[in-house]
Length: 431
Image 1 (cartoon, rainbow, N blue to C red):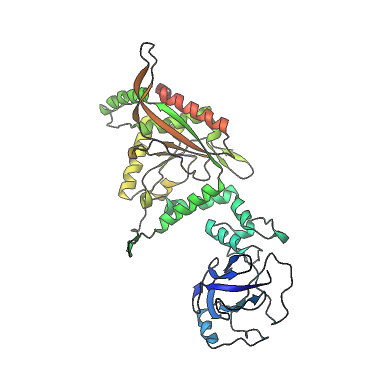
Image 2: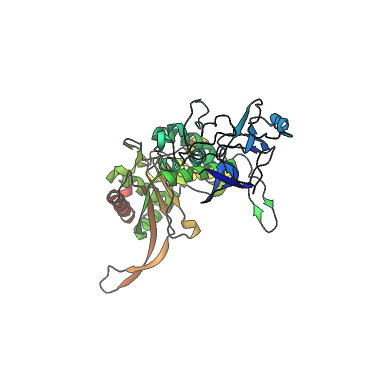
């Protein structure tokens, strides 16, 4: 690119901007590209009109300032031919850049040296990082420190592809998620913003909690190579055992065991046979945990909670039922402590109450897997009786999302086979 034309201005004098905002559209003979901001500041003066004559690379197109107080100083300024704008306190001058071009910029009119392409996304570091505007924007959206991302472009320049493929060290991911968990997944302490009605539509502003949950889901879906395995479970035996246990408990403690409680226990038991699933990706190694700490996800939207049931592998069914019931009650009342929503080693979401047959959930980093349970329903299945071809049984579909870096297809299949065995032979849950 040697010259271009301003197609449209998105910012006007006095407007503030942040890194990643689009100043204008630059039209060339081959394409129309966005001119992005790499810093925060205010537009002080537009030196070129949209739709005007072609501008050579290196010619000034606008003046920006760090402070809104400096904008007024350029209200009546007119750029003289062959001269650059005079300096003002904390003001920067922006020019269209041509990263892909090796041709020199015109020598007239003279301009100040261009600002660095971007700075590190970390406020604690003053070092400069070479990165494309899109890479800088993606790093900001994903919460990555752009100075920590290895660049594959010329001279170590960080490209958008580098940001998309970057996997941060698990220690930092775990720390970030642990810090975000109390506000992202606990019951919100503040009411949701009021809806805003428009002409034929209604906008529902997102709370900070919901925005954090969304950001974490986007990060997990981008970073984790998901794949999915599904199995059908026959619930006849486990429902029969549940009925027997509840009759016994009703006469002693009054505790009631649900089907979900028993499936949570079955998941923990399956970890004994295939412990590789109870693990996390740690960038340069895989960490396998001794205890099975399960997040039992419930609720939706701003009411989404992930109560953590610790050491499920050492608990009995009654203890699991009590822990889940207590967490559900606290969540409904808005009294669930943030520490009770910490990230565990495995997660289960039961969508059966909504009539959903199956689902493919997004894994909660740094966990390696998440199990989704569908609705229990009557289905016609092949009969074991040679005199009857088919019979009716209560069935459930379970789908497990796996991180392929930790759990490959064979290991995931072995875990589901062990889970199915415990569900269909439920007396093993009592051992």
